Structure formats: C-alpha cells, structure tokens
Length: 326
Image (cartoon, rainbow, N blue to C red; front, side, top):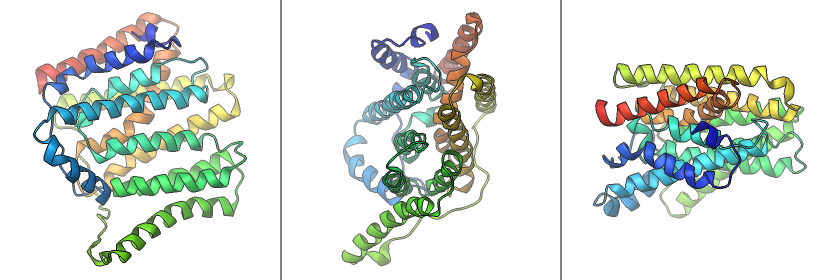
C-alpha cells in the first residue's frame, strides 16, 4: 500500500477512504458513546449536549462522524504538506500515516473535543508555515489567534497553542512587537466577544472556566498500549532523522515548516499534563505531527522491503488491538 500512496494519483483519495474504513472496521463494530470530560470546553459541551439525544439511540452515528472527521483531517494534513513540498514529491503518505496511527487505540476513534480541535490545528499549522513571505501577515496572525481561541472553547488547555504561535513568529520572521500583539489580540478579542455575549444575556456569573491542573496523564491502559506508544515515538523520531538528513535538499521555507511541525509535536505532548482529566483520548492531538514525521519514514528509505515490513507490522498491531486485545 505504501507504493500506491507514494504516487500522486487522484484515485488515491478514494483508495485512502477505503483503506481507513478497513483499518477502523473493528472500532466500527464496537461504537462508543461520547461523554463530557472535565477539561472539555463549554462549546464542545453544548455541541455534544445538542446531538446526544439523537445519537445515543444510534451509537454507530458516533463512529461515522468520527471517521469522517479523521478522514478529512488526513486529507487536510496531506494537502498542506504537499503545498509546502514537505516531502519533495507529491504523495498521499501523510494521510495514510494519520489514518494508520489513529487506528491503534479505541480512544482515538471516539468523538471528542481534541478530535475536533485537530481539524482546526491542521489549518493553523498550514497558515503558520505561510508566514515566512506573507504580505498580509497581520490579518493571518489575527485569524490564527481567533482559531486558537475557538480551540480553547472546545478544550480549554489548547490555549497553550499560543506558545506555538509566538515561537512560529520567532522561527519564520524577524521580531516585530506589533505582530506578536496582533496574534495575542486575536485570542483576546475572541474571548472578549464571548464574555460580552454572556453579559448581554445576563449569564456572565454562570460562566466558569475548566482551568488547568498539573498532573501525570494516562499513557495507556495495558502493556501493549505502552509498547505501541513507544513504537510510534521511535518511528516518529526516525522520521525526524530522515527529515534532518534530507534538509540540505530543501529550501528555507520547507525547513522552517518542519521546525514548526516539531514545535507543534512538543506542544501536543505537553498539553495532556495540564488537563483536569487524565484521559488517553487527549493524546490524539499528537497524532497530527507524529503522522507527518512517520510519513517521512515511508517516503525516504531506498529499500522498499523495509517500508513494507514496517507498514504491515503496524497494520498487524492494529488488527491485534481491535480483534484480540479489546
């Protein structure tokens, strides 16, 4: 399959959809009803509260919506990476990698606030990689700030992605205080309108923030889960090595986009440590940058049998977790 998705064939979008369905069939057979967590923001609570009366009667609807979100995120990640020429040649490996690694755990196939946020954060990363020579950088920064604020409405600890915005400015542009202020204003103005809305509806005193809590998150539920997490981290690290080894062939803007992806990865690994709830589903935030680096492992090696063995090893683990371990 890696050979198929390594080509830039429009038919691969359909093949990718089928590939993802096959990978996640085990999770479709045991659909999970979404529940509200302590760290979830008011917007996700409202959305889930609105759809729950209907969807709880048809649990499969949760799986369908979750898969459509995961598939759209895979395509979006692939689109932005190919536009930035992250892997030199156009291909569908980032999308394939994302659908593959998100199939490892049941918790990453449940409708949740972090899953919704991934859709927005992929867009944020794509926009940040375009700051390098953006003629309308101020409007872009303001929009990025607004989107991060909306992410915090869904899952409050995601406000930490402000760090990603500020460091992206350090990486991609010469320091200008006005640009930093505009990015922060994008977040602040969005929250201001929220509070204004609650004030006008005379509900300002009923609003409360979930807050932060420094805690040790749940990494996995069993030894197989820990092994899988370590396995994915090792492969992502190897992917980073391939990216670094081939950085000399890349233009400056591409190297900066990979630096932003690394920073994105680091922030997503920190966020679960400041959540009120110790749920494994929050680690899905890290799957986007992890998939980007893992796609490099499928792209760069010259020995095809290594890539084939690796992919089928990962598919085998997915099958084991879905049909034998659960």
